[in-house]
Length: 517
Image (tube, rainbow, N blue to C red):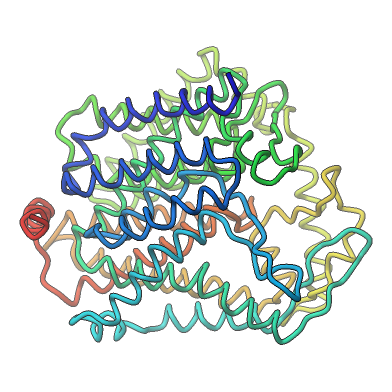
């Protein structure tokens, strides 16, 4: 039996059980029609991806499915977030006559072309289109200004032999087009389509469901030492090196569909943050606790220190800014102490301690030293060209090239400041700091009049602060980038809620259900 077919059986078995167990919870936040349609599309795309010999055959099935599902779904953002990591981000060149390639295509861009862009078009043409586009504000300005800077300042690809591909007007247009496709349309749709409390909550619940599908698969990969999706990447790209295994010590680090342990850990940390709010609308204590355990086992399977710390930051931020902060903070500290003590005393304890340097761990310390060297060199180069950066900085960091042939900046802030200067870093951070400030202001105003909506804002703050913490240890790649801008969109949508009367969560969901029927 081919390895891909065996992997498909395992994935489908885990997904079927997860969907079945998650359905009662998911239906508290979305309609049964939406849930069933999303589940069907997820399963069909998964089966097609495992059985298809090429990405383009997969796309033949995926494109009509995604366009149909995105149009039928009453919350396209929730549909998008559930399918965000249905398959790995495997980039395939689009060939074109007269040039090397038009650009690369992957699952993220399929979702953008088939779900986000049609949704943006419908928002503009709908009766509420004026309202949807009139929300153009400070966050839009900072994001577009940052995008314009990255388009104008050309950073050549880091190619072997210091080969520098020249820039051109066509290449500039390509960068502008891809910024809109990859970044701005995502923020635009999330910030405008999530126009109610129910829509924001449903989008968060869909993301939690997508991560509930990833977590048990991650645990399976870690325990069995078998990465289930790597054969797909090898088959579609023809590159045997694309199906690589990543270890920390002797332990395999789970990837699932995320392309990297750090990305997997990040997604599960954000899902954990969303669940801190969603669990207040779930009656069963066993369910509330079980979901947390599932996410944290997935986090442990990713074996990434940054997301562990990020999840803790999210939790502490949520507790600190929520109601009854001091008693809850004391309770949280006690709970974390008990959980940490239990984990350290369990068979997992030795594995956890081994990767934490300040506890005497030595596994993976080489990455800590590498990050220190990169930070020192990056700061030296930034000081030489502080305002708009050095687009040829890679040529001055050759001694930092790793065995894999890459120079890994492993810090989003350093990467932005190095190539686009402090001006670029300001614009990049201003976008999210405006979001944080606005959400905090609204949440404080609603603390007494609408505690539930206030708590929703606190959750978004926690996830944004956690993200800002985690990107200090990772480049803005894959789901890091998508969720960074999706969180910005959710924050903008939340800020706009104060301009309209809000229904209680259950009432809003009931009315949404009636409209769908």
